[in-house]
Length: 160
Image (tube, rainbow, N blue to C red; front, side):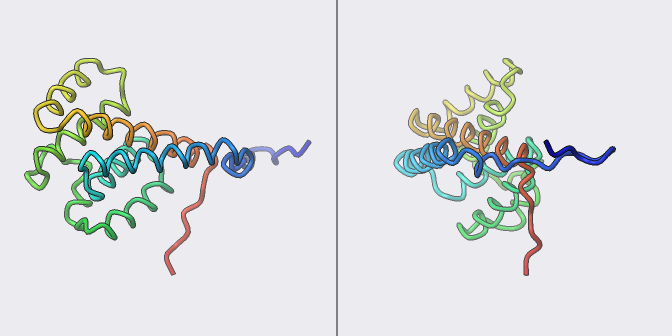
């Protein structure tokens, strides 16, 4: 058995590589969720904003790296990405984006029932039922990917 040196943390197992069938099932779920979001009329930038906000809450460096790039490719602006952690304090986000972000936060931190009810009420006013379902599924899947990357300690490489 390989033991780490005294005072050092053990090397993490990349669970996506260790259990590829389970990871592949998560990827398939993500692809189905992406299709459901598109079918519900959610544009790619909104999906990426949800991915980023959830990853910010969870502190997942790897997913923040991946989804910042994806958001920029989808046409998101650096200004909006820069203020995303404080989205409630700016008028840069539309009512439907605000509703989706609130719902994504409530999905990520479900213990606060009052905030969850408030987010759901706001979502009902700004989003269709299909969009609400899609946003919740986007948040659920990015939460799962966050856990995979955080617990595996997936590295973020410097851009070349």
